[in-house]
Length: 266
Ligand SMILES: [Zn+2]
Image (cartoon, rainbow, N blue to C red; front, top):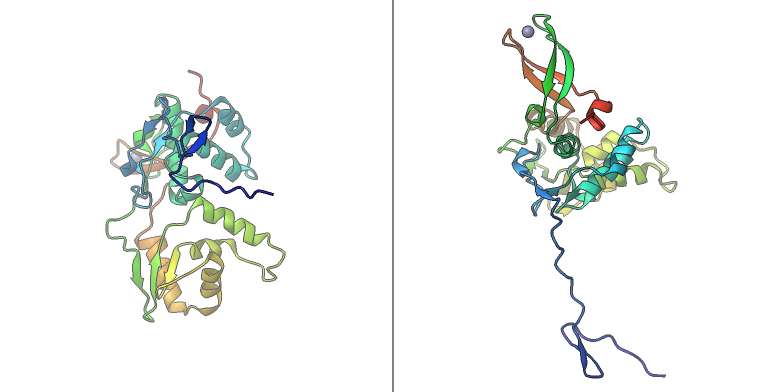
């Protein structure tokens, strides 16, 4: 029997005078319906993405699925919509704090920034009115330029941070459902662990970070870490719109995720 070897990289296969080029990744043609996203708009300001990000409009199937979204299938539906309409970053690498913003932003992109109307009531003066909102009104808390990914905890432990991604969220779900893990895991704590890239220079898996946070860290170190992430340097988008009331109050109102949002009459 003759053992066949694959050609070395860069070698050409000769086929009866016909030369076949070696297999190379063809450059992906840019889809003309893709538009480059200004990463500076994101809660993360794009700090955790290497490449440019492109968006395209929701497809008919995306809209159909979004219309049938329930609390139970929410993550799956949103992830599938984002994987269809975002490129330049893998779904698993999208930072969770950018997820809600991307969903809302792509909605306005899909419908040419068609406003949504929301009934608001000012908590200060009580003025009730209907307001129109577009993508410029999305309430975004952006990452501070002072957010340092290397931090030293009070005990002297050095942590290098990253931002939790959709991939981490899926991994957390897998860990929660892993029958080989006897301990019942706390999902919130798993997701705090997803912020930790390394501890004192040693890379940490999500499960290692979880063990560290739930069994080893001191209360003082834990409180400092939580304060850093959730209070002092919080960034994200919670599905709110911001507006100024005539009384001068700067208010926020929740976006109703209804037909008007997902499939407005054009
Ligand atoms: Zn007011």
